[in-house]
Image (cartoon, rainbow, N blue to C red; front, top):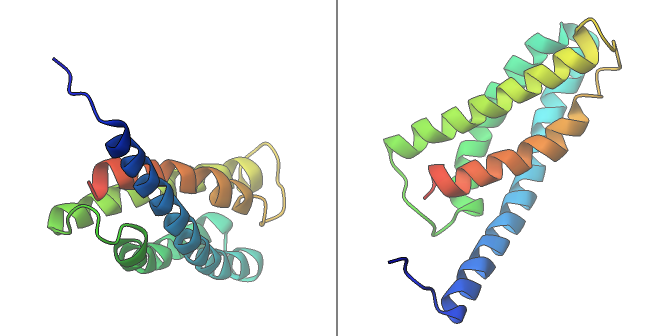
Length: 140
């Protein structure tokens, strides 16, 4: 038999998830700005944009691991070596998405757009997907 949640428990869980999403959004904006500050100058003036994604990814992952653990998911779930591995796997998923967007929009055979184009899905699509995975798998 499935367990039934009381309305107050369900609303408390919904409120908690809402405020985690708000904190994730604020923290994620800061980490994303950091990512963009690393990626864009490298991609525009120094190197191939796909290589710039690699450098920006590792830098932002290091910053994001501690920022999201301390702020976004403060008081929620556990912190362990398993959490760190799962965090890295979720970030790796985000990395694959960002590489794909960069290839499709800038360096691949289709569009050849400006180097800032991949930042649009990097700040809109990727954070929503990684929030769901962080909340429901990493910091659970």
